[in-house]
Length: 238
Image (cartoon, rainbow, N blue to C red; front, side, top):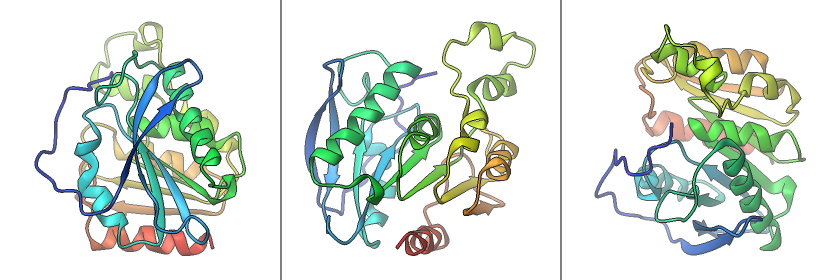
């Protein structure tokens, strides 16, 4: 489930200023984070939870677009990723996500100015945390309904429900979230089927927004249309 050494993108140059920070979790693991401060007083802050493969550098192509938005951001690497100690698991990643949230608060970011952004596996942590606070909004990129259903897509003849320990049950938690939500998914996704993202959107409470595309695969194309949608969503939160 977790592939910290997989590298899907290489050579992208970071075009936005970041402070490399260390975030101490409640169980004493040190996590690498990149923190971009544009305007903490007037702009919202995105807390970005990445997917199950690769390191922070793999997301540079996305972060470079954030410089064109009125937003601050913190992206963290999970334990076991990007040189961090520790072993990833569902419970441990919840600890990581909550510790990053508390780090933002201690560094001057109010909870109601935080937008939680989950990418793929990261949507599992994002939905878990979004249930428990008064955040500005939630962005889910290529979300799955549950890890069990996602695994069945690859292994239809194996009893994955019995074998899989980390279940990340997004479809059960999405109903408990009452903040603005943006769901983004490509219909050509070969890893997390599009119907899962559509179901998450259908189950979500209002206000909710969608960005669905015909040709995007699992890693969505960060083109002008997607960035425009992000910008429109940010404006809805002000």
